[in-house]
Length: 375
Image 1 (cartoon, rainbow, N blue to C red):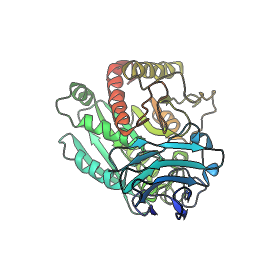
Image 2: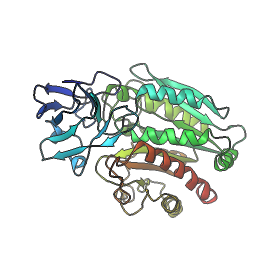
Image 3: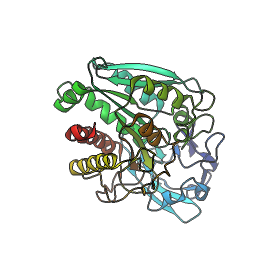
Image 4: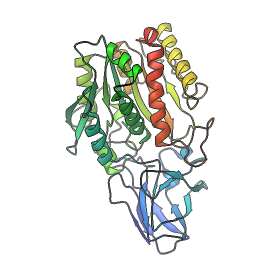
């Protein structure tokens, strides 16, 4: 038996693999940070063996509530990811699985590698509607990719959508893949109508360094990018710095920041209540978009989510709050679960890449349906 994670986005430390019934593992913390929860590893030479993988430091993870009712994902081909028996006793996370093949991969959620990211960018630029721009480079020297759909010289409005500020929240880039698949479709009437009115800028991966390194929440310098929108710098958070500079040059009339939530088994939107410029009109737009999306896609709901900030108490270092205030525009944070959508469960896959992509398509439909009131 061999446990390994020396690959793109891999994260695990193997303490002892001598006993298949008690394979001892630890999750490695983000570089220069105490955050950890993301894991991704391969078990080799385990065909037809009942294995018990014990993550010994699970109790110290960033969001211990994320382990409640959680099931890890596994895959033989790294394309189709299915849920496996997982338990947490308050100290250790235990994954139990008898592999049908000699090699099997396990992860916190279906991984989205930087190689797949590169393929996604290459695929997108094959569309005549898409222009690709490198906004700058990360601390590890990786490109900060930005996609533009539509013609800024003809469009009246500018939409921005960013994803994966927190690299372990891979569902955010699966969502982006779904949206891009929709936007490149020349036969789609909704896409055609939206692009006649607007130009859409996408940053599919805000945190390439953390993604490749197998981080949960931070970049190469141990910085949480979603706390940098009030004071980004080239030294600590070039990802935010370059994206924000581009936003200032284009303007912003609507924004989505796409994330994943470790604990809550729901898809939901968080608004920017609490910013200085919050108003009844902004509340109406937020409510309209939520209700429209819920009417389109049963996987999305409006009952559960984060409590709204009270007046004047918004954290202005957050992406959505900072952008909503600076641009006086509707900006929201979309959260998806690591577990499953409790109201519409899928016992085999839980919340999955395929469902992320479908939700992205619904988000575009919802925007089209309430365009006149929202934008």
